[in-house]
Amino acid sequence: MPSERTEVQVRPGVESDLEALTGIYNHYVRETPITFDTAVFTPEERRPWLLSHPEDGPHRLMVAAESRPGRDSQRILGYATSSAFRAKPAYETSVEVTVYLAPDAGRRGVGTLLYKALFEALAEEDVHRAYAGIVPPNEASVRLHERFGFQYVGTYREVGRKFGRYWDVGWYEKEL
Image 1 (tube, rainbow, N blue to C red):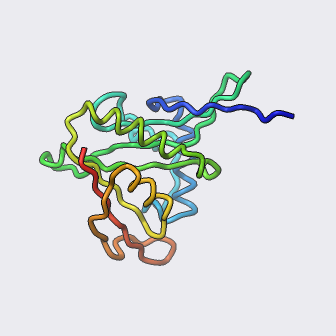
Image 2: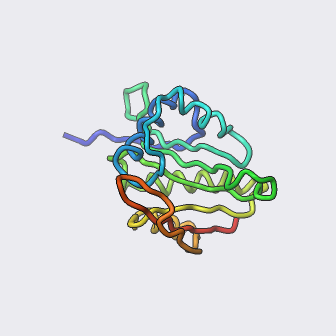
Image 3: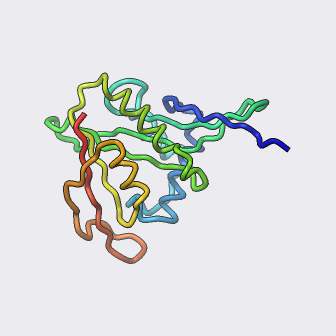
């Protein structure tokens, strides 16, 4: 029996993605130190985050969706964002970027597709630098960021406490 072909499309995130995106993020809140959020979100609580990433401008939300022949619905495999790096005005040309994938979507090139689309969109914006914080150990994330030209710039030691222990964050930088 032939395998069912799927196609992954990357597009801007929309409000109808909110439930799936919240589910992906909550996995990382519950199961990993990758995010320093410690309580899961409802889609309604997550709505301001989604709305802070419009389809244009430096703060973007790109979604990878899998389509299967003969089906109308898409399955969300992950997302990438560029968000404000810091709140003060002089930081406005810097963004913090991140990728979150559905737990079963790794090792398929989805993160690469997401970052490719995100950085293509940011090329038209007044953005000078992108930063990414990676909680070690996370070799897959380090490899993804290095593939896109990020360089390690330093580590904040024991900067977050989750699951009863302190975690470091390695910081990576990319010129845009």
